[in-house]
Image (cartoon, rainbow, N blue to C red; front, side, top):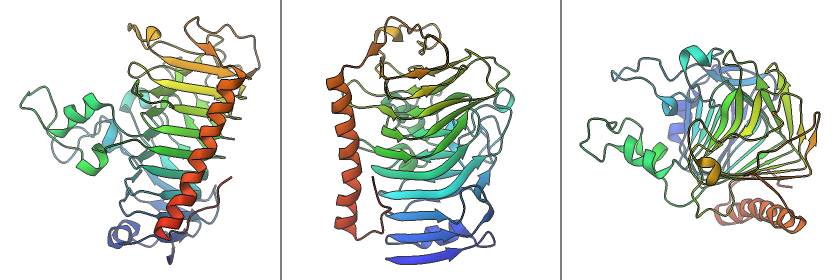
Length: 335
């Protein structure tokens, strides 16, 4: 296991590009003005201090790209992870844009890998803060340049960032995630434990924490366990826990605390769609600051369902132990 110690003066991307085996990288406190792509498997990025070790960049969807197009949502990331079994710990990843209504989507972290963990990490942006790949199948075709249809894009997203066979299991433990619209979105099986989801002010007067796009074939989607949904300036009743980005998007909320900014209805169907007939949203043990009146198409979890979900969460943690044994990687301890 290789170990590196870096400071804000180092060219982190150059160092990441040269890695060929699992490596732990310790970052000294400071602001790292970098747009990073972590490609190597088993990279562990550890900050000296969560609040003062900050990786920041400020791309946005409507920004002109050197290739003549716009950046689009999926090129705006500050950090992109495609290496398997990577982790971020004790640091902040930030997209510095603060007016999503004007500039469009602005991703802080994009993860397109079979296995990933973030622990004690702050993710800061507004719209589309965290992308949890895989992509929906229709977008893989749309963005890959596989067709001659001029309405489609021309393969502007690098293939490792766009294409991944199989699923992705992602763990977020004791993280703080900031945003306003669809600030956690994608198709991963992702477990959020003891996290704070903070909805910031948005001039559009409404917000959505999650925008899941899971396939009907996926047994698990987004799972939130003992998380706090907090008002960071959004306003009372203005934020929904989730709306389905695609049919069959799946979210489960267990033993979570809801601030007054969360709408009593909890969930939204996504504009003028029929996704209220296909979305898979459920909850149990919610502690709300105001009375709830959930939409009729959501479900309350049974005790048996809760236990099955928590068992799958424990299984996801065991995947880390297996990965470490198989690769010799320096993996962070799991719960």
